[in-house]
Amino acid sequence: MKLFDGGRAPNPRRVRVFLAEKGLEVPLVPVDMGALEHKKQPVSSRNPLQRLPVLELDDGTVIAESVAICRYFEELHPEPALFGRGALGKALVEMWQRRMELNLLNCVSAAFRHVHPAMKEWEFPQIPEWGEANKPKAVAFLRLLDDELANREFVAGDAYSIADITGLIAIDFMKPARIKVPEDCANVLRWHQAISSRPSAAA
Image 1 (tube, rainbow, N blue to C red):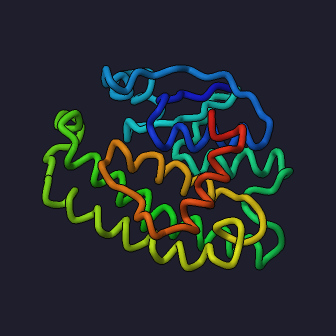
Image 2: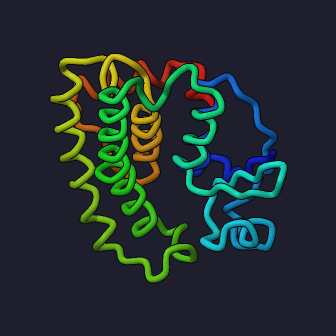
Image 3: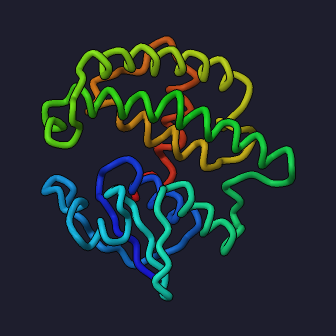
């Protein structure tokens, strides 16, 4: 088993944080995304979308997409449960994971990929207007999230989950995307500080 890893990129980091929470170590194959190595044969032959991370099992089976990889390890190592417990708990985690991904991480990623000069060779065509349009969308969702976090410790309830991991990655990625968490979002700032202090956040 080996995990093709993209370093500081959001989705590879999301899997590394997940594995760290599980206490799992998987051999990493570093891929230099800055040198566009994710578009070369070792990755493209395994994932035609040329995206990272990519997990290759010992029998040659390949799993791409970060949440799919996380789900695989959740099934193999159910504790601690990071996708929720029971029908209701799992549904709530799924709901918030999707919300964090679609309304926050995707918006932050679009802002970065379509505005940052370093992304011109990656995002073709790069549409700066689309990148800028996503910045207020991310901020608007953070205000919604701030209201939700007024009444609970974690995004999907009383337990840390994949939804928190996605939120951590998204907010940390806001800096290169040049988006700021509003200062009046005290609950988001409290939550982000708490999950950033977990050892897994350094993965």
